[in-house]
Length: 160
Image (tube, rainbow, N blue to C red; front, side, top):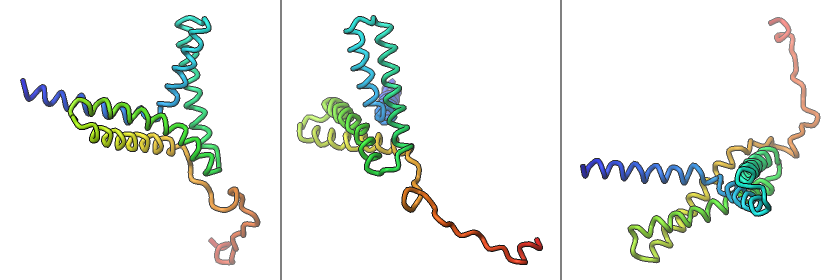
């Protein structure tokens, strides 16, 4: 029974850590959805209307961020958008790791160190997941090819 408890404990902690890393990129859309949904509920839309407005605003935020990263050609704009998505994920990662480290780490300094390391790892994961939408940019100025040379056809190429 003890062995089963240890296995299930590790499985549960592993599943929780996977969920933290998988959902890190959704910290900003979740915050936007929660804020807009609470604002809509306060203004009298009701529970169902607030849920609908909140979910749609969060989905729109995520879609707009992903499309903006994928479409923009400016590296500065991509970095700015990725930073806007990464900072809330890093803050959420800090808070989660700090709360979890209170379970088994008695030293405040080590809890802070683990929380900062968790913030960096989870923020980096969110950055990487958002960077997937950025395609490779063509080299050159704005990707335009001016006066590209045409291939030369020889007599040997015509005989084939």
